[in-house]
Length: 363
Image (cartoon, rainbow, N blue to C red; front, side, top):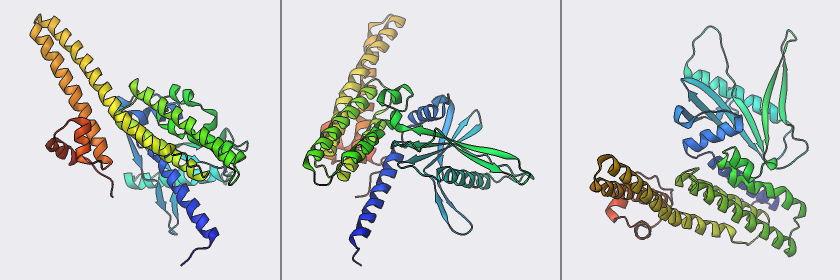
């Protein structure tokens, strides 16, 4: 059936919103270390990534009348066998019912957790998650904290509170200081409200201005991600995920404002350049580590041969690990084996072995 223009526009908007949601969630599909640091920064915790287990839990709940409730993100952190529960919602526009939605999500998740854990105590206890809403677009109507007052039949009251992060108040350095590296690509959202204020369809001057700002912001974020990686704040896999998220968000801005900047295509090239540059950088670091280990072993044993063996082993192990890591990332992107051989120097047999451990996207 042919859709009317209004229906088509709504469908495009719906698909675009879903794509943004998935992209934002991608920034939380990072390594355990980065994710724990992020939870520390968002909830003012002090968990050590080495001492905890962190898992994502279900975000979809079905009520007795078959209504489906979908939240954005629930995580559990186990520290010294004690569970801590967290809930994050990502919100673009103000929502007057936000606190009620959060309460529904938290109750549904607490009930589901109790059901899965199989509690059979006489007294039913529901433990609600510590919750946070991240608001991306600036609005004077958004409070510093959401509060819902619950009044019981005996007139006693209890306040249910939800934290708020006003994302527009955080610049790149603020995020770095709090180790919120996974939120760096989302800085693109800070541009949307400014662009919406000046946006006019078919105004080429405005399009040029927006295009230049998109390009400038993109280059800045890519540079920051690269620098943080070089400073060993996160892994190559994390860098790849954050760069991919940044690519999709940049494409969203280009499509939203009709800008043919090709900045998003440039990001793809930058990502591949990252892989090449950082493979060389890792090899250099591995060589230095090998030299230091070799020197130490040589001093301890008093043998020149020990020093050389240490150097060689360090070089080989570091270089090999970096090449395998690069091959995995390229395989996950369905890059041709010939191209992977060219970039990494690994044999076709070795790459085929690595391929068995990599889940590649459907074509």
